[in-house]
Image 1: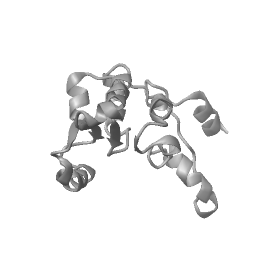
Image 2 (image 1 turned 180 degrees about the vertical axis):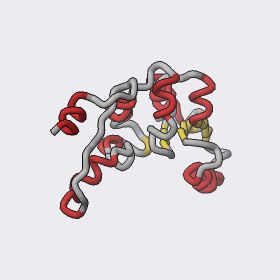
Image 3 (image 1 turned 60 degrees about the horizontal axis):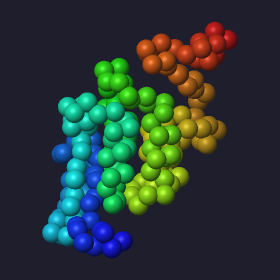
Length: 156
């Protein structure tokens, strides 16, 4: 703690874009602290431009004393997965949770596995299945094809 007090607290913030609602609300709330805290931002456009992998984004978040993830981590990455190496969307939630749990930030610990945060619509609809029509979860391979379990369900 002594090292942090000798310098400004460093907060790393990842957001979908500079003009997004979450980013604007965060900046408005944080503006009173700009003199005392070193805020560093990365947006989806920065990640694409710099060619970062998921591991590099996670490492950057860990380098801050505190981190904030202002948009769901999948935002825009479904496009990136085919274009950039190092973005395995099926592993993103696992990697975030295993590397950031226990650190000071938002979201943290089990919230990093929350299906709403991870945009896993199937998982957050399942508890309400009595209220919805039957549905089929369609899983795709990294090249966009239907996976074997989805093909077998369709064939039935």
